[in-house]
Length: 501
Image 1 (cartoon, rainbow, N blue to C red):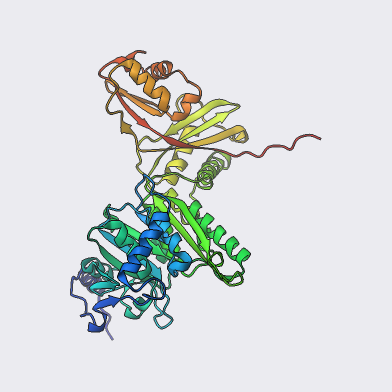
Image 2: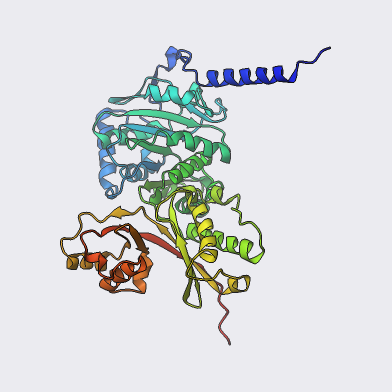
């Protein structure tokens, strides 16, 4: 039998690849929706919350009124429980009230609770609207169809018969007081990689007008003390955004928590615990079979935890030990970004090396251009080997080197600029920000930590001018331009010898 020539096989492979690309980009219509699933109707009215519209509205308003006031930061993600209002309505209200109430679309995710609907990935509800007592919410059909053409999203109507999404809807309607659409999603079986992939898909929906609500109850049916310990550990893991520890949470949808953690990391958000309660706290609650309820939100601010900061310091130390101590290539720990996903967002950082309390090297980035982890690794090596003010750090010095890392906020122009030099000095002395000074084509910067060495604002600006080779009073010129920024500083925690007896 003759074999197909190699060049013909190559052409066949190219043709097949092209066909696959065409099919994957196909915008063919999805199969028609079963008429029985055109409208999603409430299944828990009268059981988990009042079935009479006026009573439901009154109960939701009461719970929201008693909830803590909304903070002043933008909140696009909330975690809320989905038990009966009698048990967890106050926790759901406390979390959902923190959402920025200008959303036009809400992506609602809950774990699959239907044993007859076993599936992998995420099922998106193809109904046209969701009927609740006294109101109806439209389902965003274009977004649903868009998601169902992506890997990891499926159509499993049975999964959407559970109550776990509808209990959040009356709160959202009361908070918004304007038209909005919803996208109900049930989360099925999902591993760590699948959670990361799904987070990337959901990231495309984060347009500033979309809120994400993750509906979940925590540990189930343990004695109260054990339940509280399990829930506290899980909420702590979420607060630290430690993916490894989040994966160990005991909840009715931990795979969904992994998606939430990854999505919040990609959006550079910071978690805040709002409220915790469990079913033993209500009248006649059973303290031997407890269910936990947590309310958590993610705010639009990038504030790393101490754990994340120390992970960066450890990364810098490992890079120096590998390159300078052993002459090896400095490599990234493969599990670092899975454990601490926020270290994968683009952020700028400075790495400062001190020896015996004296500066031994300092190099960094003012503008984010790569992941924070990579920026720290690269700048640690540059600070040790490429700072022109010092000779390269030697292997026998490493034990005496102290490392600190400054994670920078995005610089912003000083606007409006203070009207007089005296007003500028007063502002800087009050806020003590990092400062970048540009003058006639030259630029120089001082990190916020420099204020610890140069507390006088006039000397601060004078030496900043001198640092770039400009006249000492260049900062007084109308040609001088200023940018300011904040930072988080993480210093290496070095072991200390015990006190002598």
